[in-house]
Amino acid sequence: WLPRGIELLKAQLAICLSGAAWLPFDMDTPADRIAVCLEDAEAVGMITTDEWYEHLAEVPQTKWTNTELQKPLSESVSLAKTTPDQPAYIIYTSGSTGKPKGIVITQKNICHFLRSENSILGIQEQDKVYQGFSVAFDMSFEEIWLSYLVGATLWIAPKSLVSDPERLCQTLKQEQITVLHAVPTLLALFPEDVPNLRIINLGGEMCPDSLVDRWALPHHQMFNTYGPTETTVSASLELLERGKPVTIGKPLPNYGMLVINSERELLEQGETGELCIFGPSVAQGYLGRPDLT
Image (cartoon, rainbow, N blue to C red):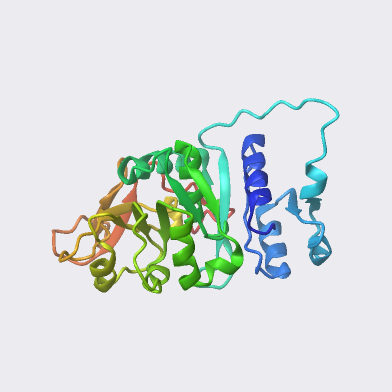
């Protein structure tokens, strides 16, 4: 439970290197919801700041401050060896019942997703990537971990900038940001073009045709992604072009999609049914909920 910034990213990396799984919370998350999720996940502890430590009085788990954790160790520590099926992180969603349920994403799930999606996006070492999503939202992993994967520069936005589209638009130009991951609603509020954006990757909600008409210009590559948290961030992707319908595109490499009926039988093209997604990035399941899994 840390504010956006370098200390949060350092803590996230440290948990990953330790072989443990992380459970991220947005700073606006109420303490009682945090307590419910920590209990459900059987978490061993929580990292926060000195200033916010007192707000977690009702959380029974061990609490560490980032100041405390940065003190030099008295002895060396060996990093844990992780396995592909080991949990990397847990994301909680409310679900239709209102009771939070944790989705377990493994090391295999997230590592495969990052390589798979970037084989199409093509983010490179020389790119400068905008980081604006909360780490409690899995689209933040596209910003953060894809940048780590290729050695790109990550530009962390202050919270005040994230909610100010006009100022954000100007800042993206001033900072020469080349990659923007965003929801369509945010992009629609930009008052003008940002010519230095090489890649615009949209997700999280439906992308309107009007946005494609505005932004699918020769100097931008504009993508639409689709996928529930249960399939590790995204499962399909489409390169958007003016004059063409906006779709969820094709499955990412090594993913697959089928349209099936209630009997789980494959339907013919043009028929309406349920979308079935498969592949190595389908999550391990709902934590402690085998019935839902």
